[in-house]
Length: 242
Ligand code: SAH
Image (tube, rainbow, N blue to C red; front, side, top):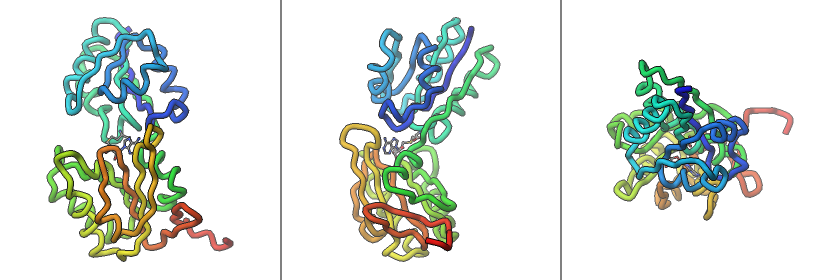
């Protein structure tokens, strides 16, 4: 059949996976993924062959998945969240082009959405998603995007706020945003959404600047209207009657 599914499995918990993602993984005979994500889904889909590689092996993983599909197997390559958001959907499409492999992209719940839901409604108005990883994007470009988004009063969702090597990116990002936004801006962080050790925190932008995020954290910076409601965060749409 020469079929390759590119599946976003959501943040981690089985109930956050779409029915379509489940059906695609049920249909596949071989599942290719990064070790952590493969381990998350293994119990749900036993009896499949798993091809697992470590971090930053995206090209290798895609190649393996395309090769399996080319050989006539139904393959699935999995990404956390959505495969089209800082994921491998683009790479898979490029690699499969001209090989006769049919690619189907199956959307998933991205960290901006799963994280937002855990905090309340922090991105209820216009928002920009920015990755702080300078692995594939020069830091100058990241700074420019932060600057202009903050100037335009967007809510911000920051992916990849830290890695083992990059420990000061979030602090630097907060300092840039504070040139245009109040240090009291309402912010939040969600760690390990839908996974063991899930944690949500609400804080000010000033506090966020000294918060230690890790690779499994998504950070939310409110706009000038964002407020706390109960223990959560709301960015109002502007309804007048509340
Ligand atoms: N394709 C993924 C994003 C991959 S980039 C998606 O759509 O969600 C990796 C970044 O995503 C992490 O650094 C973190 O910022 C965020 N992330 C992924 N899974 C997460 C989770 N379960 N909890 C919190 N943040 C998560």
